[in-house]
Image (tube, rainbow, N blue to C red):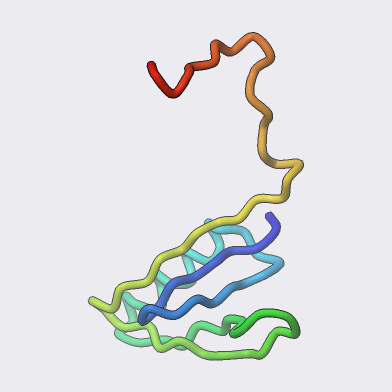
Length: 85
């Protein structure tokens, strides 16, 4: 896994070095307790640590970004569709 992007409060954050299932579990446990802080990276370039307050009803999106080696190429014999199809 290259990284996991997180959209929270309309802002973009990320987490590196973790698996999506692990992160989702941490979020679920935190929300089930009422509130919890989630440590994430803020900004691009040099990471800056930020903390997101997790609460029930607060929207959060988790978007796994795989390494390029994790992405399977299309099959060689796959039929191509033209834009007119």
